[in-house]
Image 1 (cartoon, rainbow, N blue to C red):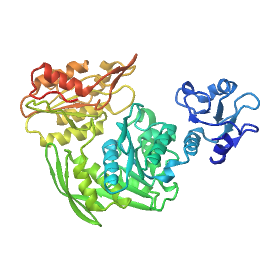
Image 2 (cartoon, helix red, strand yellow; image 1 turned 135 degrees about the vertical axis):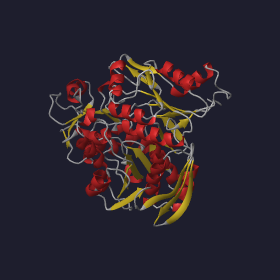
Image 3 (cartoon, rainbow, N blue to C red; image 1 turned 120 degrees about the horizontal axis):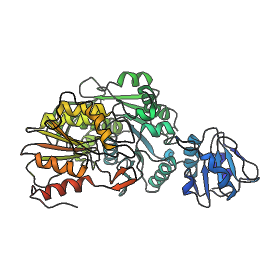
Image 4 (cartoon, rainbow, N blue to C red; image 1 turned 90 degrees about the horizontal axis):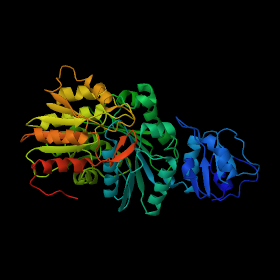
Length: 503
C-alpha cells in the first residue's frame, strides 16, 4: 500500500511532502527487524526510544513514523503521528484492510482465568455457528490451523495481532477472541481491534512493578470497556461482561461505558448463573441459567474458578446470539487448555496437575479448590518470577494456608537471585516451618522429583508456575524447559508409573 493511502486511513497522520509514493509492505516497531519496504514506527519504551533509530533508518531509505520531529534526509518518506503507540496499531490495521471490522471481536481480560476463558469462548462461538479464531498466551488459532504462542507475551504487539486477524478473515472466521493483558491495554497493542464484547474474569493485585499502583492496574483493565464502547458498529450491541462474584464488580460496573452489560455469578443474582454446582476431582456439573432458559453442563474441568470461567464464556456467547442449549453443550465438550490444571497420568497412585499459576490470586485459587477435593495431602511446587511482581508474599500465604507440604523453587528468575526471590515467598508463610512443612530446592528438576518422592496414594501434587512454557528465563537468556516432560521423567525414574509417556 502506498504511504499516502495508509496515511489517509489514519486520523491525524501528517504525511511529509513528496513521500507518498513509498510502497509499504509491513509496519514494524522493532529496529532490529526492519527490511526494505517496511514502515518503521518509532515507539517510546521503558528502556529505549525508537526515535533514536529514525535518522539511520531514514538514511537507508526506510519510511518512518514518529511523534516528534527528528532530523532525516530531505525527501525521506515519513509520517508525523500524535501518538505512535496508537498509531502503530492504526497503521497496522489499515495495512491489513482493518480486519477487525469484519469480525465479531471479544476481548477477555482479568488477573486470572483469561487463557482458559479465551479458548472456551472461541469453542462456544464456533459450536454456535460463528467460527472463531483466538489469540492467547498458549496459542493462536484460526480454523483448523493453530500455532504455539512463542512471543513470550500474553498479547502480542499490534502488527502481529492485526496480521493474525487478517489471517482469520482470509480463513472465513466470523469472530475472534483475544486474551488481553493489562500491558497490552496500557501500551495500545489492542487499539484498532474494534471490540464488540469486553469480558472480565476477575481483578486482583498484580503487575505492580509495571503499573505502580492497584488503581493504575485497574484503570488499565477498565480501558477494554472504553475501547469496546468506541469501536466500529457491526450491528451487535457493545457489551461488557462482569463477574458479580468478584470484588471488582462494583467499581467496574460504575465505570461501564458500553450500551449493554451482562453479569455472571455462582453466589449472587446475575444475568447468567450456575446453580446446583457439584465439584469433582476432574470435573464439575452445574445448571447454566439465563433469561433465555437453562441447560445442564458437565464441564470436564475441576474447580469452581473454571465454572466462573465457563460462565464468562457463556455470557460472551449469549451476547453474540448463541443459543443457551448450544452454549451448554459446547462447554460440556470443551477439553481444557494445555498447562491449565492439566492432569499428568502415568498410572501413579496419586494425582499430578500441571498449572500456570504464577500469581498469588491464581495460586490461592488453585490450592483452595484442590484442597476441597483432595482426600490425602496437597503438595505444591512453585516459585516466583524475576520479571514481574506477582505478589510473592501472597503466594507464601496461599501455600501456608492450603498446602500440607510445599517446595519453593526457581521460576524464571531472569537477572534476579533465585534465593532472594524465594526468601520473598518465605516472608509470607507465617508459622510454617522450613524443613518440616516445606523445603527450598532451587533446582526445579530436583524439586519436582522430591515432590514425586514424597507423594503417597491419594495425595495431589500441583506443579505451579511454568504450565505450558517451553523455556526458563535465566540471567544469560532463555533455557529449554518442559514441565510435563520433567514431571513424567521424575515419575519414570522413581518407578512410580504404570503407563507409557504420551507424546
